[in-house]
Image (tube, rainbow, N blue to C red; front, side, top):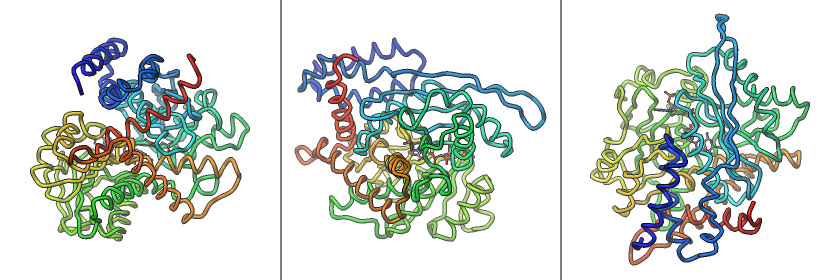
Length: 452
Ligand code: NDP
Ligand code: 2IT
């Protein structure tokens, strides 16, 4: 980046930080995109003249509301919920709902901002949005979760719709929550439409949506490896998290000849040096998705595996790393350890799991580094396919959906290569490629609309 562009970037970021005080995650997500897009805009003056980046970093609107519900013991609880409708230039707002005590406006703005670029990369007509609540589903009964979801949807249903805004799952929101949310939408609006994705298979869900994010990450890396004449055979992987993304990432790695050797949750990580085979993954699916247990229980059954309380897996020796839990779970110290251990492939399953410093270390090192908005787009891509199936009132087979997912992930990979092409013997800049690829699509639509 030359001096003039660096100065323009700093001035832009100073303004953004002033306009959005106390939102560090949002600043971080914008900084990463601006680092890629400002040099591009220096060569494409019409985007700068139209203030596209300034407009793109201001959400269209944010709805904030109270959610009251009654706990099993009769006490009345109050949570806060949000829907950030970030940008609908290329389609209805689309993005998940997160239920976690750490949810706040900064987290949801970073997620909605990133979603806008990710959705554009899929090639499907989806804008960007995100929502959620500081509600903590852990330790709550099914009935409590149901009452919370019904109360939340009673308000949310005024702001969403199949052609307006289509939420889905994210941390803490899976099949159970989507069922309760969809049931309440249908009841209040008297409408059976594709207003949510990730639905159950008996009421409009798509085959393959549950697995799509984790499988998609591995398909993305398969493309990266193929480009340099490699594959997964015999490679080991550090995977963090043990939710929807992490478990299906480990499953697809296994199917393609690799092995995950770690998984984690908020209590610590497990290390199984032999790797997770299908029996072990089935045990983990039951433990985490049905019984909602803690990861340590795995080591009671598989006694050779070790549990490391309160730790993250990044110091374990392996070939690849797939952070699939949450934002900023891999920092500069972790990145240095990974590089020192020879881990050369880092693919983000979670959204923004690497700090900006960690990301810079990987890029400077020439690692094969896949940024979230490219590598975890498989989930929202199959959500887009679910919307199409709902609109046509048909269901595709698992093979049809999986084939389309593989095509979409290859398409995203190729856009990254196109816009982040290797220069002077350097590695492909997948971060720059994803940011510029997503930006160009949204920006050209905004340009066409004039000043709106
Ligand atoms: P789940 O709720 O299914 O699983 C989340 C996992 O991450 C759990 O193992 C959880 O542990 C762990 N985790 C969550 N928050 C923290 C935290 N603050 N510290 C440590 N561990 C934590 O969520 P998903 O698998 O759906 O989502 C994981 C990531 O992937 C998120 O960043 C999400 O935004 C992203 N993503 C999800 C998509 C999807 O389709 N579901 C699509 C694209 C991205 P514990 O159970 O102990 O809380
Ligand atoms: O971060 C994400 O892409 C998701 N949580 C999935 C969003 C969706 O609409 O399927």
